[in-house]
Image 1 (cartoon, rainbow, N blue to C red):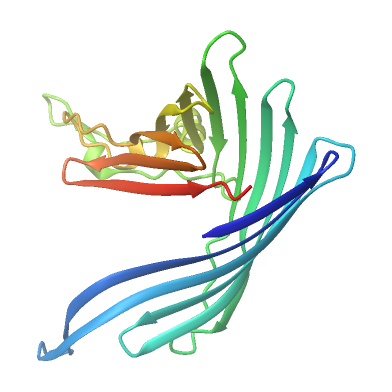
Image 2 (image 1 turned 30 degrees about the horizontal axis):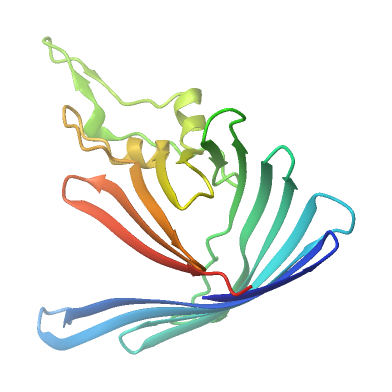
Length: 254
């Protein structure tokens, strides 16, 4: 991705453009009778362009992102478009940020096999604040606000007592509310070296295995600034058999 920003007085405008590409690799194909049809692949690409603007003489910002999305699976393709809209409040003196984002407002232009599908609409809100006397920044994110009930009954979490009575997993109000919540913490924010920690309650609950400590939902990383470059690394834990490492590079063009 690439972005360019320029400023004058208190007004800030940002233009950006980016490309996201995902390749699923190769798969072995078979027909209904189990006969091999050879290998096939799948990939997705999204091209985005965006613009953000500081509302004059205020601490409020508004921005939008336009995306064109293409998906391919074997001989089938689909093409669509979407818009992201964001609102941000940033108080520089108090180091407070609050934002609301609406993602994937759009539709499929060309569907798979003549069946139109809804894009994954998501509404999220976030808040962050620097601690006054500590080198810490706290982040709180509320995700999937477009759908309240995210909890579901997990049969694997049912408990059986000595008499054979089964108590089903029944997530309550608090459990469901926490599944919308993601917590984050930055240590030494905006310094040469940063440490970052995160915890997703929904990921932890959905991937939890009884009597097994898998640290699902935990993520951690760091970033290192060298002149106009900032290198980042993050490790996200899912289960004992699944985890993800992410590497990033930010370039300050000013």
